Image (cartoon, rainbow, N blue to C red):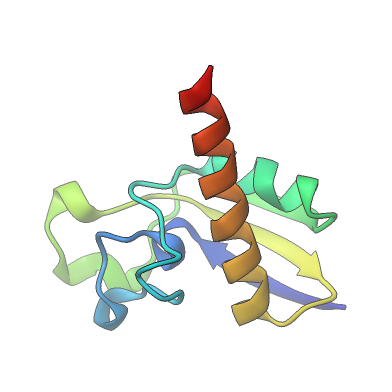
Length: 102
């Protein structure tokens, strides 16, 4: 199992790859928040080790304030970081679809 940091901006559709988006745009979500990421990780069986809601990814220093998404989660997963990010982004999308239907 690997431990790694997941920054909220890594699955944010508004951010370019240059500024830290790690997943393809078709999987990314608009304005992900830390609670969604935590819920998605837990529902996928990924262990959440630490949460910091105020942390800002250093790669976002050059973008507009409105595009900055704060927060990071340290997780432990049996998958690699890229696969884990894709799974979390998909799960966040599922949660949002379920919420819209209500």
